[in-house]
Amino acid sequence: MPMAMAALAQTPYATGVDSPAGNLFDQALAGRFEAREQDWRIGAIVYQVLPDRFAPAANLDAKRHLYPAPKVLRRWDETPRRGVYLEDARLWSHEIEFWGGDLASTRAKLAYVQQLGADVLYLNPIHLAYTNHKYDALDYQAVSPEFGTRADVRLLAADVHARGMKLVLDGVFNHMGRNAPVFQDALKNPQSKWRDWFFFGPQYQGGARAWWLAENLPEINLENKAVRDHVYAAKDSVVRSYLRDGVDGWRLDVAVDIGFEWLDGLTRAAHAEKPGSLVVGEIANYPKEWFPAVDGVMNFTLRAVLLRMASGELAPALAMRMIDRMFSEMGIANQLRSWVMLDNHDSPRLATVLPKDAERRLAQVLQFTLPGAPNLYYGSEVGMAGGDDPEMRAPMRWDWVRDDNPTLAWTKQLIQLRKTHRALRVGDWRPLTSERLFAFERHTDRALDTVVVIANPHDTAVLETVMVANSKLMNHWAMVDALSPAATPTKVKIVTGLFEVTLPPKGVMVLVPEPSPGGGYSAYKRVR
Image (tube, rainbow, N blue to C red; front, side, top):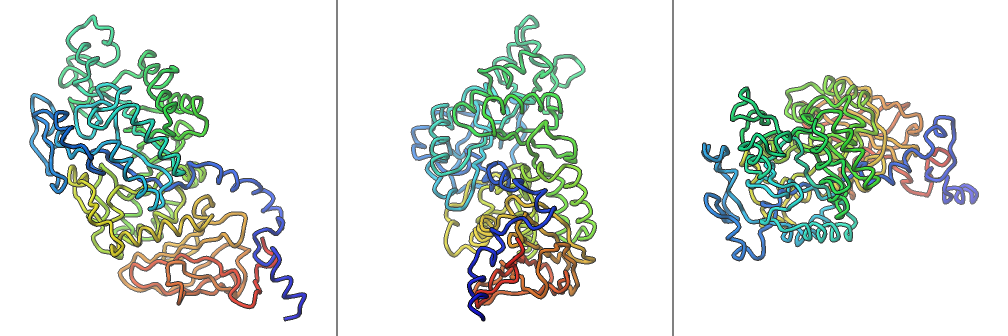
């Protein structure tokens, strides 16, 4: 190679990363991806924890008095089982079985969460409540003593921040618990000052409007300004005061039931208290019109499409049309702040839903490569299984956290893949043209950021020509499968914008441009 050519290969132009914008399309993107990189809510990896089940408390013997009968304190090695309905309490017996985790024990495991690669710690409800799951609040402003105090929240937030992570709490603001003192006073006294905080009448089973007829969960009257002030609007409200304690955002339980108007007010209040805070809604509806009432949604529609495609129930071409339409209608920026989950505390665990390794791994690759913030449910990274409630809420299997656990190693590989590639965190989305495969591209304003994902959800191998509509991917230059072994990487050449790929049954490739395979030369020398 001539010396001039050799020198050129060492300039920033050789990588394409620092070369100036080369066309009007690039100029239109100026600042878009840099702004996304400054927003911690975009593309974050979220780790979800049920405080009672994540880590056993160090001082469990000293805490036993916090679980009086009929509550039961179980051993950590016991598995939750469905119980019986308790008529007097109007709840299920398994809802008052505890395993003894708390905020302090969660703090003690932050090193694990950090080393796993999480950016956000999300806790299921911690406010004062009767049950183990705490979706039946007695007092929003107080923390359940089994978990700790508001001081423990501040300590946890400080430790989370010291590790470069964020803390998100679960807000249950559609309903409270039947045992809440304010509800009991309102129920028994028609003149109670709390009477207008709830909905009473003979038309309601149990005498009060309850969420989906669950009598232990009376709905609160958000149409009442005093209630809104208490929950989010006033300076000393629940939403705003926890944000001042160091919390960075809220996941809103059954947000779809709260409705557009009050969600919008809550989100505005959170942003006013802490600019850049996150409000993500549990919205199982199609997510088209819920923005900007919330910053993001838990994308249940996406979850259903991915699981059905991975199991072979949904053809990849149809799945692609569904997802592309959804992203287009909700807006890519909104999807980037939304959570992409495959399981959580309300659904059977991934290992139960997709027991076949190949199907499960295909779904996980898509979870970590599609736009959005992957939501990891504690224990699923080590392979925990579990069916319907309460089986999916079993205590964390710390004995499975080992270097020889293949599920944990695979999860860490996917997390590192996402952290390595800018396009997977903040990039835009574009479907590839394919007949039988599920194929898409994540891209930014830099050619070498491009990631192409091609998945075969069929039970047979597929050979297909796929078109990638990216004018900067250089002809006859290789792309490397980031999931293949580093010592013997799988490579695919781009020829006039086309790939010819063969994927085994349930196979998936994550292709990235090969920057400079040897000799210092790169075809991307003048393409940003």
